[in-house]
Amino acid sequence: MQDQGPGELGGFGDEVAGMLHARALRHPDHADPIGMTRKHLRAAKGRRRTALGATATLVVAGGAIFGSGYVGLAHDNGTGAGAGSSKGTTSGANGSAPDYSAAATCAANMKVPVDVPRGATTTAIAHALFEAGVVKSENAYINAANHNQGSADIGAGTYVVCPRISGDNAVLELLKKSNLSDASQIIVQPHEWAKDVIASLIDKRKWRQADFDAVIQDNTIGLPAWSKDSLTGQFTVEGMLEPGTYSLTSSDTPQSVLTQMVANRMTFLKSIDFETKAAALTCGTTHCTPEQVLTVASIAEGEVTDPSDGQKVAEGVYTRLKDNDYLGVDSTALYYIGHLPAGKLPTVAQVQDPNNPYSTYAPHHGLPPTPVYDTSDDMIKSALTPAHQGTYYWCVTSMGTEFFMKSQTSAFKNYCNSAR
Image 1 (cartoon, rainbow, N blue to C red):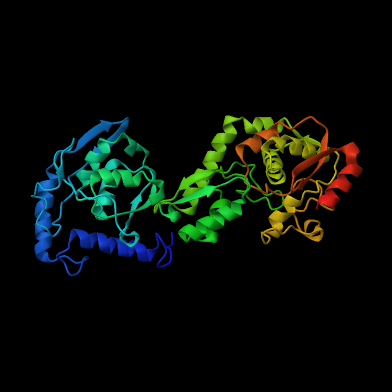
Image 2: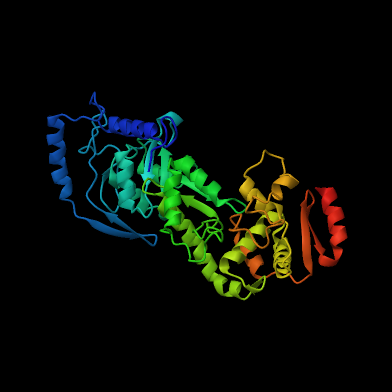
């Protein structure tokens, strides 16, 4: 994983600045916050021997298990209240623990990054907070977390929080989603191209397109065997990323993030018996493949504004495939054309370009090579349960999607051409 650029939130510059600031807080008597003199090292070693003598405990609270290792070393804060001082201490399941009393109020440029890995234990989070200079001791946080059942809901990600705050406040700060850095999460939305999701991940984490291409092509992310481009035969993630909010941590990679998104999609597909139901449908003259039904769902995603209309689009697609008629869907061609300026629609020449493999106008029969949108769960269900209303044509207008039967060809052309 490559670091973000200097000056960007969560980037290399801020991470280094945060670490220097945190060390300076814990060692204010050092001119160099990174270097430690031999005297300080000997003193720290002596304190560590004492700390390592503490008994490891296992505490069960609020249905979650919290493991406690050795007590974090309390460093002198410049006021003389160090490990041996009772000032600013709290008591809990792990005994007395040096603690700050400050609330979480500080200037934005004073906040420090704290990385919470996926699956991190309370002890691991406490250590991360202590190392960042947020809490005075690890047990200050552990005790606070054990007394706050909400701490079990702390999610993974990089948080930016004030330094030198109490353990109780540290718990509360990690429960605030607003404290997550922008680079710590990504939202996958229906009606979004998977290639745009990947572009957003590259922007947030400074990953490389080549790394995404490799894990998709080699399918090290759990794609089913049928999730392939019908033209190239290569694996594709289009339509295979489950919508939702995903946390991103420093331990994540392109492979781990896509694996989670694909796994969530597969969990949903299995819950509705997608593959079996897809095989019961007809695409042209043969039974549909799961990929074809997912493509139909993606077409419906791009063609309707009301989710309840998805079944009508699905019916129209299946019927036109059976009749070997051109689908004539503009949204499929747009996938290949790319993003247009706001308010602009593709031209007739663009959507009917014979060199566009995603065009569904002559001479391109059948479905496009892959799904063309990341689809909502409801639209996938719509593709599995097409309407039986004789829907054959439709067009998208500013008023919504209008539907017509095959016998209404003239009405369809007159209405939709004038509305274009």
